[in-house]
Image (tube, rainbow, N blue to C red):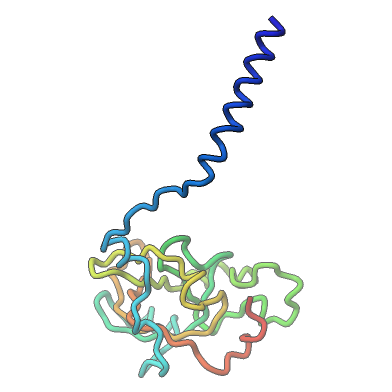
Length: 192
């Protein structure tokens, strides 16, 4: 019995040694990219603009005055959760600049996740947040992560221009046409 088991193991090992190098010489087949996939994997060329949108207001003021379908321009910081970017979707959250992140409080060491605004009251934070999406022509968020594309970072000071979507259950969602990275951001050198 021992001999049969040893022969079996030797056969398996020999087969692997012969077949494995052949398999390594072949690359895995590349799936074809169709037009629909390619279209959803890149950001619009005119998404990032070089001038602040006219009439941009803080997130809180926009939330108080805008209604679904309105063209809005708002200013704030990317944040509101530990990771304000949605994985594999062009969606993020931003917070009104009147709220203070832990990074702005001076002692960065006391909070490992300052973009979540954990030092603020959670009810006040919810009132001061907006979701921002970059969509395709059908209105669906692009299948791309803004955490790795577009050079956006948590707590970056930005202005967003776009259209306010219908609000379900208190959600405040803006489909962004343009994003402007605010100059002279006092936190810029401390953002990761």
